[in-house]
Amino acid sequence: MKIFVKACLITLMLMNLNCANQRTPTGGPKDTIPPTLTSTIPINATLNFSDDWIEMSFDDDINTTTLKKNLIISPRTELEYSLKSRKNTLRIEFDAPLLDSTTYTFNFLKGVTDLTEKNAVVNLALALSTGPYIDSLYVMGRVTELYTQQPVSGVLVGLYPYSDSLDLTINKPLYFTTTNDSGLYALNNIKDGAYKLFAFTDENSNFSFEANTESHGLLPSLFDLTANIDSVDLVINFINSDPLKLISSRSFGSYFNIRYTKPITSYHITYLPPHPYTFHHHLHDEGTSIRLYPPLDSLYDYSLDSTQIIVTVRDTIKQQASDTLNIKFQTSTRKPEEPSYQVTARAVDPSLYELSLSFNKPIDLFDSLDVLVKTDTLLPITTLFTDQYQWNNNRTALSFLVDVPWPNLQDSLNSALQQLHLKDSLILASRNLKQTNIVFDSACFVDADGLALSKTIVSLKKMVSEDFGTLIIKAATAKTSFIIQILDERNNIFAQRVNQKDFTIDHIIPGSYTLRVLIDDDLDGVWSVGNFRDDSAPESIYLYPKSTKVPSNWEISIDDLSF
Image (cartoon, one colour):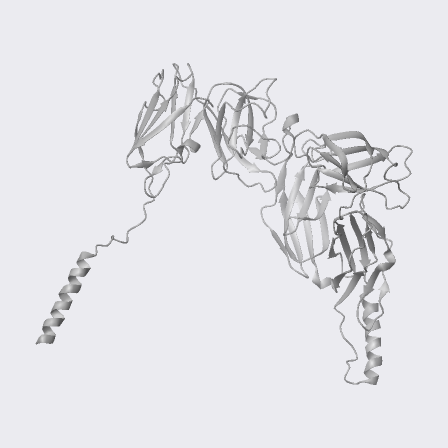
C-alpha cells in the first residue's frame, strides 16, 4: 500500500513539473509571404505634389534597416531625407522641397521586409510629379558579362543628359537603377530628350564611375529617347581605360625600374648610339613596370657608364606611350631574388611534344648541351638535339618541340634486356616503355643576375593515336571576319582558327571543351574589347551553349555552330 501511495505522489509531481515548464509550440510552415502595400500618401502617379513627406502602409509589420542603401530616387538628387517606420507604416521626410515640374520615381528594391523572416516587398515603387503631368517614357533591357555572356546583378544602369562636355568619370547619372538577379533593368518615368546610356558596377556606391577598377558597358553615341524601348541590352567588361603614362624611371638596388600608370601588354626598347652594352629586361610588378638588369660583363663601370634608350609601350586597348630615358645603374649589396621556372609539356601527336618554360627573370645563358634525354637506367643519357628552341623577346619564356622516337627507344631497351636475360633468366627479356624524361641540368640556365637555376626533370608519357580524340567543326554563318576558339577546362585557348568555317583538330587530349567565337563586327581584321573613352562597345562574342566532351579514340562533330 505504501509503495502504491509513493508511486502516485511521484506521478503527480512529474505532471506538475511538466505543466510548469511551458514550451514554444513547434511545427508549422515557415512564413515566406512578404508584406503587401495597402495605401500610400500621396497615391501613385500624383500630380502637382508639394508636400515634404510621403507615407506608405502595409498589411504587416515591417523592417527598414537596409532601406537607406536600397532606396533609389530617380532622377538622381542630392536631396537629404530621413526615414521613419513604426509597426506597419513607413514615412519619408524631405529636408528641402522637391524640384518644380519634375517626375520622381522611388524604387525600394529589397529595402522593405517583414519584421520576422525578412521577406522583401516585391516590386515596391512609387511615382509622383511636382508638375502637371507624369513623365512616362521607359527603357528596359538586360546586362551581361562580355566573356561569359551571363547576366550580372547589382549593376548600376544610368541615363546621363547628353552634351559635348559629358565626362563619364566625373558626371553622375540623372536617371538610374540597378539590375536584378536576372540582369534585367528598367528605367521608368523618364523625360524625353537626348541621353547617354551607361552601365558600371559602382563598387563603392558613390554613383561615380572608376575607370581603373569597375566593369562597364555602354550604348555608343547618344540615346535620343522619344518613345518607350523594351530591349536595350548592354555588355559590361573590366578594362582599365586610364591614360597610359610614365610615372618614374630610377634605379632600384642594382636594377633600373621604369614604372607606368597601368599594366602594359607589350614594349620595345631602342638603344641610342653609342651603346656598347645592352640590358636584359622584363615586365615586373604585375606588368606595371619594366625592370632592366645591369650587364654581367666585368668591364662594366657603374660609376661612368650610362645609356640612352627609347621605350615604347602599349596597353590592352592599344594606347601607346614613348619616352627617351637615360639608364644608369647603381651598385648594391641587396641580395637578388632566387631564380625559378615552371615547365609544362603537351602532347601534340603520338610522338611530338611541346615544352614551355617560363622564368621569373630573364635568362642570360642557355646551354642547350645540358638539355638531356633520360629514358631508362639501361639506356644511355643523351643530349637533346633540336633546332626548335624559341625565346620570347625578353628571354623569360622558352618553348620547343621534342620528337620522341618511341619505336627506336623500345628496340634499344629490349635489346639491352635480352642481353641481361641471357645472363640471368630471372630478368625479363622485354618491358614496355611508358615514358621518357627531359632533364634540364643545373648548368643549363644562368639568369640575368648571374645565378644558375636548379636541375629540373619533366616526364613525357608515351602516347598512341588511340589516346587522342578528334574534333570536327562545321559552322553556319554569313560572317566573313571571326575567330573560332576552342577553350579547355581552365578556359585557356587550346586551338583557334581565323575565318575558317569547316576544320578538323586532330590529337586532342581527352577532356571537356567549350567553343567561343570572336566576331569582328566592323570588319577591320581586329576583334576589339571597346573603350568608353572613344565611345566604342566591345565587338560581339558568341558562346556555343554546350560544353563538348572529347573522349579518347573518338571523333566528335559539332555541326550546329551558328552565329
